[in-house]
Image (cartoon, rainbow, N blue to C red; front, side, top):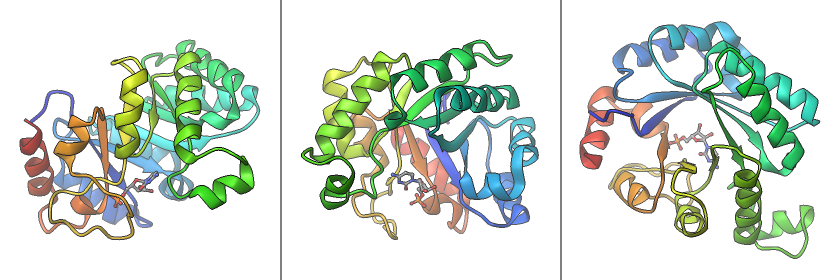
Length: 232
Ligand code: C5P
């Protein structure tokens, strides 16, 4: 069991009983939990608070993107809910990110971490060209990750492949949070580029977001512990 759990289990359920049934099988010392737009829209702050009350660190993955004042207030509200981590889109710009960070620091839970999404991994070169012509996804990721770091945020969400590149230029304390993680031999599902937990940590990733390999396992705690042991 790791002291600061490296695995963030993604709770992607449309049913609160199913989610709670899974959570009952997990342990706060073995993992953190991620609540995204679907579960938050369905079940709201009460669900998030119930997870926090069970002792879990919660990553509220709502990817805020709006004018600085609005995002700052949303981030402050998230921090005051008691979440461990919240995120914004880096493409909202430096002022939006700085104000969001300041708002968290002035909240009753100033230790809440703030990270940013650079380029959604669902965006390929063609799609990115429609939005930001003339740059490759890797260039855009590097540019927005540097802007995130310069704006005082704690880290970024990125693919494990991008982690190798970002670790070269960003401070060691800058958090890299990475989905698309599959233990060797696990079902890849709809993920296109996957990496094993061990390879991701070796690439410089700080936290691993894992959904189905744990949530759909016959024994979720055993699956989680196997990942933790591989990292020990
Ligand atoms: O089940 P799986 O391990 O693929 O779940 C990964 C989680 O990470 C899901 O909640 C998914 O929405 C999220 N995610 C992702 N790729 C991104 C950003 C978030 O898979 N680029």
